[in-house]
Image (tube, rainbow, N blue to C red; front, side, top):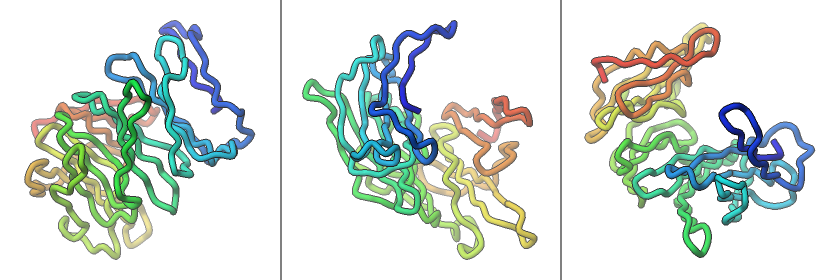
Length: 254
């Protein structure tokens, strides 16, 4: 976890960008990268604080052809890992930095001639889940897992939210999982989880109208657990088989 490496389709190394200084900590920090829609820029989240590099985290834009640093921004976070999502209509990127029990910080960035134009959303208690297929909205889940919310992009105003109670469950026994997302432009998947009386893990996936927030009913995703579901936004979704290989599903329910 001390370098970003670009390889060709046959596995040949094309370039390597070191995450210097090299970290001697093996656990608790997971860098992440994301390729821009035009394949010109690699966005890299660096959890430098947890890696022991004596500074706060960084968000770096690399030239995808050479690995050269184009721009970078210091983040006011001490994160373990980060989730990056592309907003394809604008070329902007969303980053959710997870700080463990301290919460989660969501950023929005674009690359300009002056560097990285960085915006910080005014929350530390929302976890980024997904962007709508058309880019007009995004989904978050409360860090304490009490509700899911849909926000207008880019400002982040809440369009609607759904609590555990809205799904007919007791919030003392159930919670909204940090999973789900846009099945298609009109349908969200929200996951409610918890434990059974005999302490076995329990979860249910629900279909929700992406425009009104109306709960349409349960959704059978053929998933093995609450995180074994990745909606792709086009009416299909991925799960995994027992060997760990992906399975792509589609349904008239979508």
